[in-house]
Image 1 (cartoon, one colour):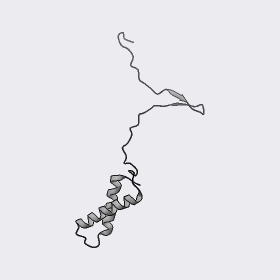
Image 2 (tube, rainbow, N blue to C red):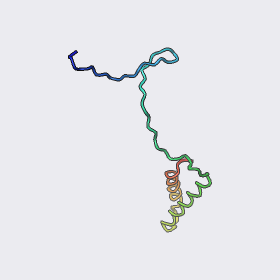
Image 3 (tube, rainbow, N blue to C red):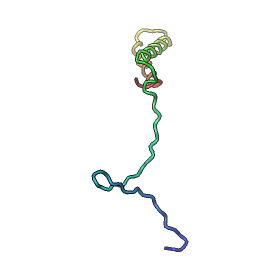
Image 4 (cartoon, helix red, strand yellow):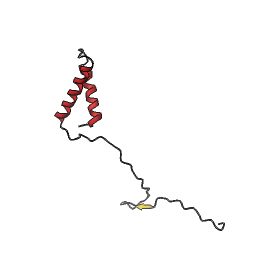
Length: 88
């Protein structure tokens, strides 16, 4: 080896002995936590349904309460509440 140079060290996973006696190379990786909505944000199913009903009402009001769009209003309001408060 030329003088003045040190060999570079590559860090490798060290072998680990498992319960079965086999040797396995293991590398530890840090796992980042994902941001998730709070599952129920502390509200009951009844409160959630009331919020959906209010949101659907406001959607119907916005379109002038024209008949035939009630189901679409409800579905969109439910989707909006799920995005905001998460699944219950």
